[in-house]
Length: 343
Image 1 (cartoon, rainbow, N blue to C red):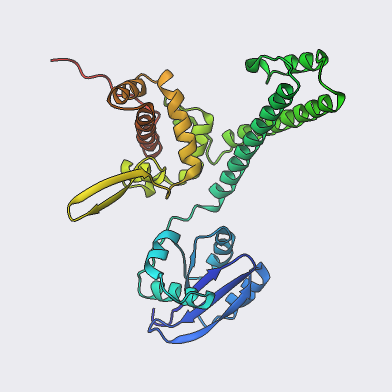
Image 2: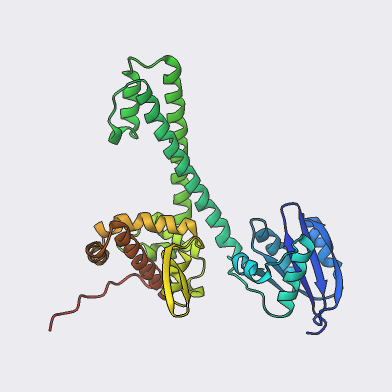
């Protein structure tokens, strides 16, 4: 493999800086290429020989990786946080960053991260868009309630989301000006549009052949609904990449940051290095799951007796991760353990 060239790619929105070296570290070329498919194709075809590359994980790196991977012998994605710790230096620019990536790859010191398959990544994008629709629908619902309160109108909060109740209320408004009534009607129309689209996206995801069986197995866990199952399947990707439950818990952001030195350890708040989408879903699921799952109810009650409600919720969320990972890796429906008999 001495004829293999090593390439470091510093990816930005409109351009990609590159550095090319031989296996011995001899400089070959450096420069900048436009971040377009045509320009990247021409650049890759002009390289002097077979090459291996590395690029940092960014918002724009996924499509660049997918486009260049077939043209490379190897193409790795570097972990941003770990890369920062290794390459922190006084001098920092695009050319230097590309060269550092090249040298780390050449010396087999590149801290790589998991790269989600394109098919899963596309479905995950749909799920995250669904989450955006839900947030916008909630904002509109809150705005509707705010408009009613601004004009002193009485309403039943628990029924405000119901279509029949809302339009009956709209017809009976006496002290609200016409302009505000129009805003209420427009807000309700947008709310219904968002809700309809959200339901259509979820239905399409659940029935997608790539993940349909997997989501169905995950939902055999009592307390795991369609959104939790979809979020786990699409955010985790391939469950085999987690060697233990503790690694999955850490990825989901359900454990504290560890700081240990000279035999002294201390724990801080929950780590910010996590999958925030999965963390949010699991925490919300953990608040409801004990109502439907006897095992999770026991965990919640035990931890509630030892500390606060937040601690109990986190304990349930961690147990959910263990259940989800076990079902996902085994490929079998969830089977709760029978309670141990007293001697």
